[in-house]
Every structure is written in structure tokens, then in C-alpha cells.
Amino acid sequence: MRFRPTIVVPAAGRGSRFGGTQHKLEQPFDGLTVLGATLRHAIQTQLPVVVVTSEAMAPLVARLVATRDMVVLGAAEAARGMGYSIATGVAERSGAPGWLVLPGDMPRVQPGTLLAVATALEQHPVVYAQHKGRRGHPVGFAAELYSELILLDNDDGARRVVARYPAFGVDVEDAGVLMDVDTPADLEALQASSHTAPMDSPAASRS
Image (cartoon, rainbow, N blue to C red; front, side, top):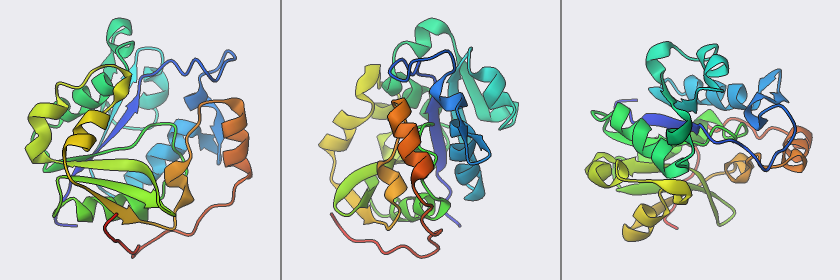
């Protein structure tokens, strides 16, 4: 596609709600890991991708993307939350025409969904995927919001930015836009769910 926003994948959180000795992003999923499946779909779009991760997760990420496509945060930086990870990814790709935020624990989001949000971002400052009226990810931001995005911090993510601008909802059949992995029960539900068909031409409508 002509318009090529960067997909920013925050993957620096501790995942403390998951418990156990293995990080949630390292859990087996679809023959890969949770993070591996998320990145597989992101890479399949052929859009630029940057992964913001922690020192602990860096070895896993390095097996999935090129070194130039990852940013490794120190422990103190990683502890600053989703907002800081988004800001770091946006700053790393400051020349992009926009950014799609796709959390690393959302392995069911399909490539067609990412492309649908990217396409809508050409016409709107903020775009999000929605399934059956429910907002999900990815969330896209136009380049004009750069100065606000790089100031994000803590676990609020980009909610305040979304709230300040008219947001356009892209209706998709992809239920994966609502599915993340916070707990072992979440992972079991994802593993049990069937794949939605890849969406080459998802319908879009204003929310």
C-alpha cells in the first residue's frame, strides 16, 4: 500500500497478572509464542514494524525481528508502562506517516485488520478497530499527533490522546481485536477459539 504507517508493538511489560515462571509473551501459541504469533501477523502486512521490549524479553524478540526493528528498554524504563513504550516506539520511527499500536499479547489480530486501520488512518487522526460495536486494537495515530504521543507515560497508554480527538472506528469481523492475554484463562480461551478468516477487504464505518 502507498500509505505505510509503522506498527508499534509494546512488549516490555512484566506480565505479572499471568503468574508462573515464564512470561506470558513466551507462552506457546499456534506453533510459535504469543509474541511470535502477534508479530507474524504484523509482518505479514508488509508495513514497517518496531518492537519495544525489555532486557529480559530481548532474546525472544531478537529471534523474531531484525535488530534495527527493536528497541530495548532498561528495567526502570520498562517499568514506566505501556504509555512510555508507545512513546519510545513512536520516537524511534519519528519520520513515519502514522503509527498503529498493537500490544504484543494480541496474537489473534489478523493482517487484514491492521491494513484496514492503516488505510483509514489516511483520512482520520485517530482510528481503531472495533468488533460488534466494541473498541479494540490496533489503534492508529496520524503523524500530526507526534508531539503528544512522545510525551506518553505510565499505564494509561494513549487513552487521553484518543479522548481528545475525533476517533474513527473500523468495523471488522476479526474478534481478535478484543482478545489479549493477561491471565492463563485468557490464553486458554485464545487457544480454544477458532481463527477468523483473513480479511482482505473488511468493511469500514464510522463509529
